[in-house]
Image (tube, rainbow, N blue to C red; front, side, top):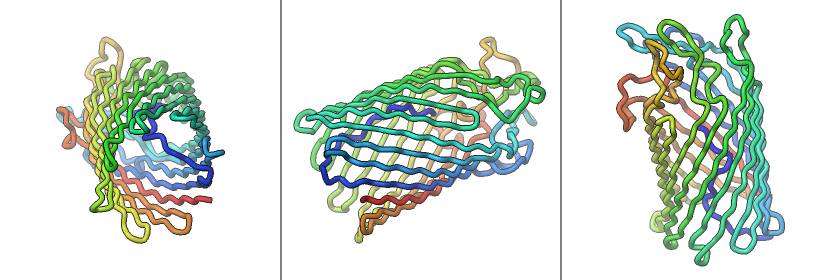
Amino acid sequence: MAIPAACPPAQAEEASDTTPIQADYRYSAYREGSLPADKISNRSGDRYHVDSYQFRLSDTLAGTQDVAADLVVETMGGASPWFITPGVSGKPIQVLSGASIEDRRQALTLSDTRRFGDGTAGVDVNYSHERDYRSAGLGLSGSYDLDHQLDTLSAGLGFTENTLKPTGGDSVRFPDRIAGAHSHEFSAFAGITRVVNVNTQIETSLNYTQQAGYLSDPYKLAYVGGNLLPDQRPDGRRELAWLTRLRYFVPAADAALHLDYRYYADDWDIRAHTVDIAWYQQLPHDWLVVPRVRWYSQSQANFYAPYYLAEPSNYLISSDYRLSPYGALSLGAEASKKFRGWTLSARYENYRSGARYSLHSVDVQNPGLVDFQVFSIALKKEF
């Protein structure tokens, strides 16, 4: 699911004139698992892989102004789901695109947050560029402390403009592929954070997003009554997400429990639940270990089907697994070590998806559902 440009801050923090400059670097390797042989009709290479390089530089000016620059460079390639055909007894069979997809993405975000009395005001601008896609956005956010900083109100707005120019095909092989399209996205959030006591903090927020323009996937097709037609989705989407976070410090264990719940709903009839549980365990000699488990479940979009025996009357068709009903379970762990102003950390995540994890009924599981692993290593330095 798309993440809006404006995201609610966890909590306003105090700063001082002695806050150091901080530089961060993270490398991440994302690797999708191969599909079982009985679910695909072609073996065209490995599924998608992404190598990500993230850089961040942040500083506090005069004790009242936080500035940061974030740069992301990603290289990606491999095969991805293309379309689904009916197999024996109607069993859906996935056709992959081939391993020729290669791309690079660069994204830059600049942010500036200023504190004044009991409040903060922030602005961020972002730009992302790929071979076939450009995105530019602006976000505004603010917060205000009440009741001696026991309560923090936060709110924000975001706007993103997107330009799509598909590549990798020609008018002979793909006569129905669009030459270019535009879309835009508006988002807004509001939330409150409450310090319950010295060990407990609760945050809850609502996030609304509205998208308009070309929202289909130009690289995907759908099987319709023996023909292959372009992916066709509505030209608008309204999304609402409710997020609640609990942070509880356990003095006896010198550890903290992080518990998050997110409910999502949109006008494509997708309903989703996410539960994220993490345990932050402090260890001697400045070690920190964080085991984590995340569960996710969603219903399907109202126009989705693995394949179609006839074209729907509204002409909306998509066999994208991301619009199908499914669930997922993710297990991960992170370890970090501080030494002489440096922090070194490593993180691993193993993600599995399927009907067995779904809260909703899944009559036919999409054969293109993804399993993946992510490994990352990060280095942070305070100057």
